[in-house]
Image (tube, rainbow, N blue to C red; front, top):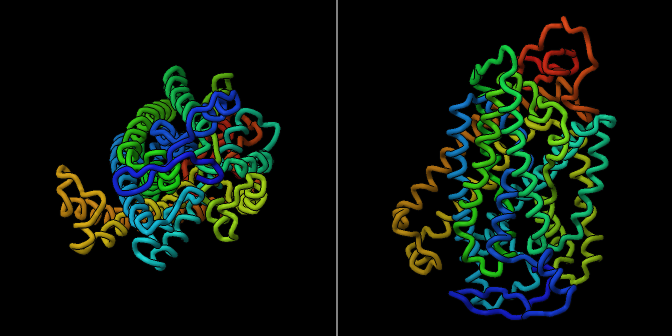
Length: 487
């Protein structure tokens, strides 16, 4: 559990669980327990829910404009279900790995188990290497997206500085996460994260309904396969936030209670994403094709300026990997660990400045990285781990009857592998890369202010034609530097 003290360990089922120290009457200890030391099922739920949607919430109306209302709703339900299933599969594999290792007297009290270690322990080094490559790359770009989102959001609050400058500022803010030892210490941060996400979602919903439909609103999506699969892949990314599932589980006092947590978090997240995306798309329609951040279409008010998305969740697993690589993971000095973590922030900062394409980058990461990290690799790992009769017989967690036991579980996993490989990685990768390359061709790398309003021009100027991700100045103004060519 990083540098936290552990008072006792108890055997529950087949593996060791960490229990917090006994009661302390000190004010400092009570304060720390209230805001810092969180290992309950509620802490895990807050971490899962806040990490699952976060900044993607603001791009879902954009996805609806690409998909159309019906497809947007159905794909959210579908990928939410698939994401919950693979999180369940990852939790089963975690428990299996931890049980086997602790039977060998391995002590994890000062070591955070990660997904690549689970793959290594269950399937060997080749699986470990593949899992490590995909997971680290995804977490790196996940952190990049969170940083881009923060800069984009704050720009709509204060446009005296451009988005690139805000990225510099928030990159420095992101560096403060080096002082959070593990997900065990995310209690107040994950609570605030979900609180702000909830507020933002309902602000988008209510503000859009009060605003009403813009004059001449059109809801023409879907119109192109490129747009359709780009939007679909962004939703796949939305419910693929459990690249940190193992770290969140390991931070729990009782990890075996995790199984249903992700599903409960997903159901809650849908109460935020479905109303907000549908309401914004209803109000603005095809205009969202030019505005990947939903904030850009809503009028500036104090209520909008209060909406914000927290960041930092995806950084922490990368810190653990780096600590293990340089042999500092089990160091008990928080300051030393914070110091050695700082180099991890630099590439996150740099990539956010190179590729500030908020919206298109989500779909690209979803198709090329999330598809394997979150869906394909866990489903295949489960099949290969329990492919033998002996492994199935000795499994710590037997598949429940209502899933069809082993046959049913394997069938679901095979379906997920085939579907995500063809639709998510194949079609989604094709569409997302075309869109992403188009952003580079149109805006260039290191663009100073991606999708920022252009200088005001004559009101008689024609509205922009909707390309893959064109950007208008104000809703009805056009500027050549904010246009993305049609394919």
